[in-house]
Structure formats: structure tokens, C-alpha cells
Image (tube, rainbow over all chains, first blue to last red; front, side, top):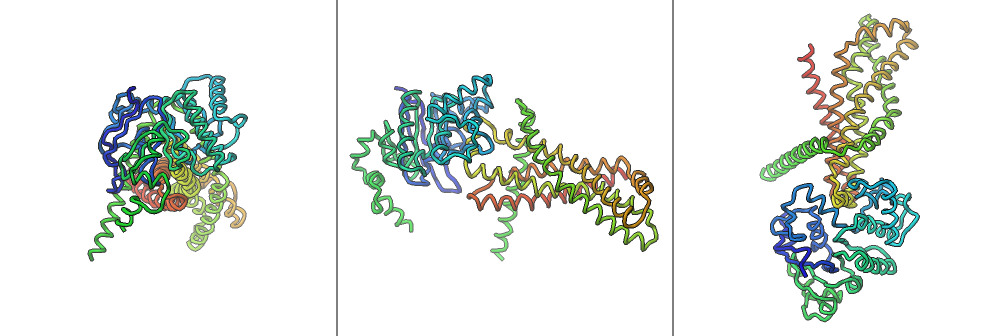
Length: 256
Length: 260
């Protein structure tokens, strides 16, 4: 298997604080990789590098073997249409209807006829289990529905890679589970590569082919869900068991 | 002393940062302005919001300014015994100065603040990032239509405010001070030269650009949620007011020498 995404020695700092520090990660085609880590440890920052919204201070990100930092604007746009991103709060455009949101990529870039466009929008919404809401505004939707619409928007252009930024945060456990099911279904149906960033371990175990833990700007452990569950790594153990005392919090106390 | 210097240094730095960021936005906007595809609908939508929806407030303020101006000038002219000049002074001060500046300030407060709040909210809810992931440049999508709308609508609104203001002056002079209607209108149109109208309107194109650039810039640079949006909106209005008055001073001086 060839990796579809290769991240080599990625470094990124904000205001002299190193958020990502020599991070290496390989993701193979068709895999669902879950990146776990504490809030604010740079998981979202990592995702934003993959869609090239943020530029690395140093290091390389290869997608299909090409360094995305060396692409021109047109190539970046083409790349972005192959990547769907689901934002934490949905990030739906609240001045547009649900239909316009879902079809946004096509309305801006595609040359589909009006009929084809509507079909694509309906198809995407259907895949996330929604229908008949094309003309609603995002403000009329519940939190769980917003996440689904955001997902529909991400898959509308039929991307090869889907990035999820905390898909189950802020929704009730039942909706959370239905989103997990959805991530798996989309993965099976569209055979996409998925990267899920989360700190919800239940979600991580249920969707992942591989789990990687991000800690202090590096990937400190990676493996299948079983390997991670049975790991002896003290930091990973503290995180997955959700303990207040352990190596993670000790280092924090040292800083204080 | 050291603290004072540090404070001064920080302020100078943030000013330079602001100028740099704003110029960057200006260049990007002019770049994207000429890159197809061109979407007319968005310019129309923004023009409606900036222009048509501002008509009521501009009418009200234009009328009041015209009436107030007529009273103040009447007071002075009556003391000098030259009521004949009221009409021409009202018209000239409205068309050359008050119409453009007052309209620009009203639009900055009404439209500029709304732009900063809207783009700022989009920024904190990651909608700007979402635009980029959908391969859409935020500057092209958000700034270009707003720039075009404001640069086109502000001169039209100003022209409208000028007319309403002159009408306000007319009401006071004709119905309160008893100046014959025909005479008032004749003096008004005799006093106004093309260059008065032209210089008054040309500067509003630039005022419109100032409003668009500053309010978009402040919106993009919002940090820290709802509070950040509030702060940015205030900063955007204050900065726009200052820049509009500074630009007005510049253009007045410039036109004074070009068209003596």
C-alpha cells in the first residue's frame, strides 16, 4: 500500500509556542485514521495543514506524492476540491440555504446544469440521512442536523479524503453514535481516506483502522484500536482511560 | 520611562501591522477584482444592502442637515443683511462638504459595522476556513463585491443626500424666512458649478473604498469569539471615521489647488 498522505517533520509555531514539533505521520489510501489528543494540542492545526489553510514553518506534506507547499493557487484549489472537511461547529454559511451550502463547491466551480446540481445535492443529503430540507436556513437546524449537513457539503464534490474535526463534540450520545455509523458508512460506500480528530474515545474505537496520539506536537503512539487499548505507554494509558492523575498532568504541574 | 517607551513601541508596531495588513488586503482585492468568474448577483445583493437599504436614514439625516444649515446660515446672513446668499451657501456647503462626509459617516456606521460583524462572525465560526476548503478565495467571495457595491453606491447616496439637503434648506427658507421659491431655486442652481458636484462625488468613491477595506480587514482579523466581534466592530467604525476625515482633508486640499 502506498501512503496517500505523508507528513514529514512538520513544525508550526504560533507566537513562539511550538504547536507541532517535528511531526511525522503516514496515512494509507482507504484508511480511517483517528488522531486523539487533549484539547488545544494542535489536532485541528494539523488538519488545517492538510487542506493547506495553514502553511508549515518547516517540513513537508505530501499528498499523492506531491508536496502541497509547492503547488500554485490553481493546483491548491484543485487539491482542495478532492478533500472534504467537516468543521467542529459545522461552519455552514448562514447566509445561504442548506441546498446552497451543500452544493457550494459546484455552484462556485462546477459547470453542472441546474438539474444535475439539485440531484447531487439531494444525493449528498440522502447519504447523510436527510431530505426535504434544501430550502431551510442553517439557523433553523439542530446541532446534530448541522453536523450532518456539513458532512453532506464535504462529500458533495466526491472527495478522495475527508477530514473530520471533532465530529461528535457537542451532540448527544445517540446523535454521536449515528455520526460514527455515518463516518463508517461513507468510508465503505465512497471508499475514501478519512482522518478524524477527536478526544471522544468511544468514537475513536468505533471508526478507526488506526489510532494515533498527538502529544506535545508529536505523534507519540500509533496502532490499531486493540493495540492502543492494550498499550503500556503511560501517557496514552492516562489519556484513553481519562485519568486526572498521570504523566500528562504531572508535566503540567511541573510547569506551574 | 522604559515602560513608556515599551508602550510607544507596541503602539507603533500595531499601527505598522495594521497598515501592512490593510495594504495586503487592498492589493489582494485589486488582484481578485480582475480574475474571472465575475458574479454580478453578489454585487447587486451588496449594493442593495449598502445603497437601497440606506435610503431612509440618509433621507432623514440629509433633510435635518439641510434644515439646520439653513437656520444657522440665515442667522449669520441676517446679521450681515445679505439673505440673498443663504441659498447659495447652503447648496455649496452641502454639495462640496457636508453631503459627502455625512453620508460616508452614516454608511460607515450602518454598513461598515455590519460588514465587520458579519465577516467577524464568519471568522470565529470557521466559515472563512470553510470557504477556503471549498476552493473559494475569501477575498474574492467577500471583499470584492462589497468594495464594488460601496464604491458605486456611496456617490449615488451622496447625490441623493445633496438633493434632499437642498430641499430641507428650501423648506426653511421658503416657509419660515419667506424667501420666494423661484428665487431660492435660481440662486441655488446659479451658485453650483460642475466642479463643486464633481469634487464632492469623486471623494466619496474613495470613502466607499475606505469603508469596504477597513471593515473587511477588521472582520478577517477578529480573534476570540463574540467579544472579539464586538471589539472589532467598534475599532472598524472608529478607524473608518478617522480615515474618512483624513481623506476628506487630503481631497479638499488637493482640489483646492487643482480647481482654484
